[in-house]
Image 1 (cartoon, rainbow, N blue to C red):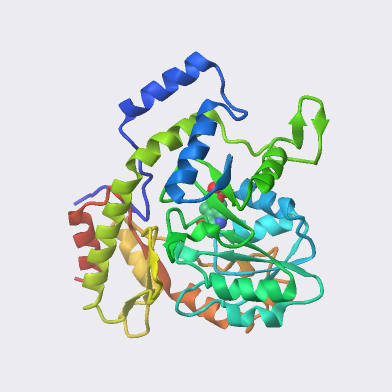
Image 2: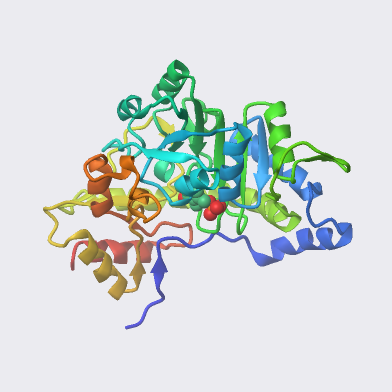
Length: 369
Ligand SMILES: *Cc1c(COP(=O)(O)O)cnc(C)c1O
C-alpha cells in the first residue's frame, strides 16, 4: 500500500487564484523591489498583526540576523545556544564574532539563563538567544543579566511568528528580534525575514544597512548589504496574512490531538513547557525516553519506512559541526543537557493541511501497532 509521503511540514499556500490580482498589480506598477508599494503595505500590515511598532523586511532570515548584529555593532564574543538551526551561529561567524555556547534549560530547551553569567568574559558584547519551537525564552532574566553586564540582546525569533507573552508580542523583547518567513515556517513568503526594532531610528538605520548603506541617490553611510525583500514576496506575504488565523487554528487542533494521545504512550514525552504564552504550534517536538521500546533513531527510521518524514530538530547540535567543535565552549561536558536532548528529540509532522486521518496514522505508528 503506497501512500503519499508526509513531511514534518508542508508550506501553507493560499488558493492560487487569490494571488493573480497581486501579480497583475506588480506588472502594472512595474516596481519589482526597493521599498515598493507592496513592501510598504506589508510592513504596516505585519506590524499591526504582530503587535509591534517597527520592523524592516528582509529577503530571508539569515541576512536579517547578519544585519541585526551589524546594526548593533556587535563584536568579540556572543553568548548563544547550541540547540538551534545552524544559521543562528553562522550569522556570528559571518560577522567575525566568536560564539560562546551555553547549555539549555531541560524544560524549555531554550538557553538556560542560570548558565549565562559563567560564560561572560571581558570580550562578551551580546546574548543571541532563540525562542526554540516558538516557546519564549526567559526574557526577563536574560534582560536582567544583560543590563547588569551592559550586553545587547538579540532574539532569533525565526520560530516565534505570532507568539504572545504577557499581553504583548514576544518580539518586543531584547534590542532586536529577527524573524524568518522561509517556506518551512509557520508564516512564509517563499523566502523572507524581518528585524523587529524598538524605534523609528533603529528601523531607519537597518533600512540603510539592507540597501547597501544608501540614504539617498548619492550618499552611502555604511558598508551595507543587499537584504531587500522584493515585491513578489511582499505581495505574497500580504495575502498570507489573510489566511494566518485559520492556519494557526488548525495547528492548534493537531497539537491537542497529539498531546491527548501521547499521554497513553509510555516513553514518549511532550515538552513540559509551562509558559503563560499564546503559542503558534510551529513544531511538535517529542522526547523519546529510555522506557520506549525503540531508540530515537530507530523510531525515526521506522517512520521513514512508512513514508512519515520527521526531523530531529536540533540534531546534530550546532557546536558539533566542524567549524564550531574546536571552540572551548563546544567541548564535551560543557553542554550536557543539549547533548542529551539532541539524542532524544524528534519533531512530528504538523501543518495545516495534515488531516485527521494522517494524524491518527502517525499516532498508531508511535504506538508501534
Ligand atoms: C529558519 C531559521 C533561520 C534562518 O532563516 P532563513 O529565513 O531560512 O534564512 C534562523 N534561525 C532559526 C532558528 C531558524 O529556524
